[in-house]
Length: 433
Image (cartoon, rainbow, N blue to C red; front, side):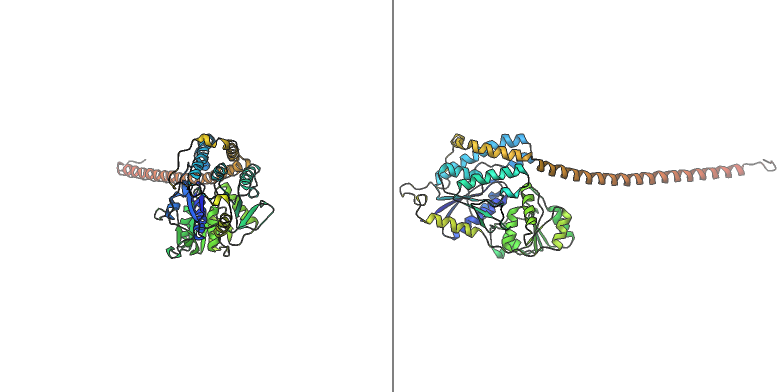
């Protein structure tokens, strides 16, 4: 009987789902059986790839804070986090997989409560961040998962450094491949993240004569995998790390226009190590310049196959988790009982630390410096535009006033001329002035 591996993805952003789908397909290709979970922004892509996934409570700290407030992040995302852990516990207990592979810390917490062998995927290491608070948050996430996981996979495109955790396994970037015949080759493929918009850049590129495929366009239907389209392009423009990994595996030059803190941290490291195949463009004009003169092609293998081989090799060795008794089979994939949040009470201290670090990082000095800098830049731009409009309006008003005065003066002159003529005609002959 083939090993059954649960594969769970984080719900914020579709890139988490496509990355874990790559792992799921590699496991199935290597002879394993897969059950998917995660929900959130990636559910559509999971369905497009033929999986019926379990959807635990969705957590989205970015939306509750950026679209709301710190209070909403604490009062909505914290309870949702506890619910997500409880849902994962119920699912893992019902399905009894031989192992869990995940990039979702909440799934990792649930696995430790259910004694399910854990394999973790994570790229945002503490050394990625310059800000002390954000670095502390990343260190907490990393240390917890390093301590809980049988193996901690670190998929990266930059070279090794002292910032790499000692027990992390460096692997090539992970990308979801697809049907090469489905692609429609374009000059530039534009891939925004869940938290960024690149539509204006796509419009500028089209005006410059490029054939552009923008996956945010209204007429674009989501596909099972973007990698074939990226592979067929001359260059890809993106914000998030998942598309960076796609470009690395596809061998397509990549222009990175970051939007979030994590994306900016990744962009900083691409620049710091001068990674072949990638150009960082902080501003829109920089994107246009980089597309006109793209970097050389990157060359990387797909790390999904490495993960599949390692996990299945572990499970096929004598292991109590890999040999469930015949009279106690796992429950059906859909038979997940409702679990009380109290079942996850042992995770509250860990979860509280996660939420504290997450919400504290929202108030970090570097985050606010970036926000204030962005506001100042937008204000300066708006101020310049307003000044230009005022000057234009001033010129227009002055021209109008001058025209009105000139017209009035002409009218007065005509009236005076007419009066003089009338007066001259009315003079009595022989009468002097």
